[in-house]
Length: 141
Image (cartoon, rainbow, N blue to C red; front, side, top):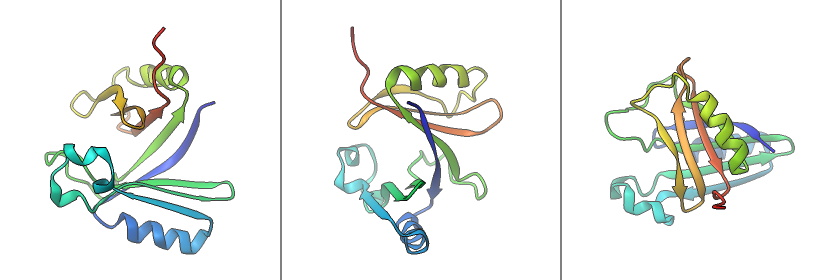
């Protein structure tokens, strides 16, 4: 089953912001630093204390977030630091990904690919909306 949640992007203050939202909404908060994951080998050491994944769940409210990790040519732009986060099984996620990819911006497009946590991809669609996709591992038949 596909699921979407808001995905917030911060510029180094993700932990502070998500802790504040946790104080406001209650529930459970999970914060994962980049330096505590296998992805640390892909990113410069000065970003290892940044949050690679934050997840807040309180009842039916769910918010996902991260600190900005993009390449330097893609600096964060205030007002554009959000995305729609789509999760589900690979076949469903890939189907939606392929449809949204029609006319997507090519310079910031990441095809679905294997990461240590499953399949991952992201894009800005033809309306300049940011989408991030995570699915279970692709089943090879």
